[in-house]
Image (cartoon, rainbow, N blue to C red; front, side, top):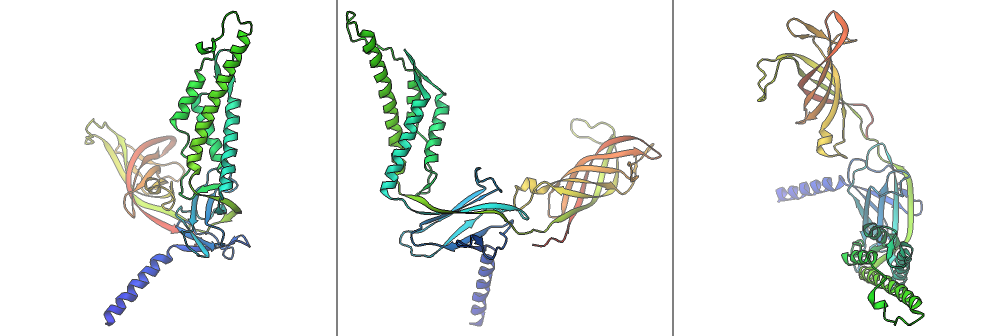
Length: 395
């Protein structure tokens, strides 16, 4: 019995430890701040929580780089009230790791259910905007129609008009407008290639003195009908999307330039061994028996090219290293040292293959012992153990 009880307690502690790793940051709507102005978690996932008013059914969090809210957000995440739920709290997961010692701008948007009247007005507004764009983008000459842009560019503009019209709305299905179909594009192409001087306009006799005037009226009417047909097709496609239930924005809060936690800064130091190439040929199959090499212990500093919490594995394991070889290099007839510190210097690209082990490849900077006037460069390869020295900026 005691063993079972201890097992349950142990599992509960493990579960608590796992959950506690995901910090929950409370948001205060009235004061427009997070907790007691505490910094946001850095280099890890976290949760945003806050009060959920009765009439609010969706809360959306967007995170931007400072003063770049006109650009795409780094992250957008939301909470949607489940059907029938009476909860008074929302919780939004933030699965995008934020950088340490940085600042971000955050927006918290509150959405309520959109009424059918609002959706009807929205559809009418979008149709008017699309029709106005078509009118401004087409020019009817005497015998043909000219489009101001290529149909591919026009369809991009038409999609953008719809998406901008929907900026205050969110679909309850979580979908975005998919863009206009190929039918709309085909209609634009046909409109571009349309010839207004068609046989069906020549229905009047030659003796009719008003022939030219009536024929031109027919051409214009035909052109207008084609535009109307295209507008109807687009309206139906927009209407199909708007047939889903929607939320509409009620309130939006902005928190500018909010800081994240300070993260520990480290200085990677490398200790290892370098093999420096001096002379000889390497054949096509890699035979190096006739080449001349010399080796020496090396020590140096690394500049990481990526953060393991923010970047891909390749960049997180990559670095640029610089340092010195602790011994002069003996190449038989010549002994090589380096400029300034009188030890060979090196600059290399390094890649971590294990927790401590780093492989290096680069160039050494050499001068001949007793003759420092000429600087030479020789390639090298090496392996080193990397140790991170913390610089005192604790989280």
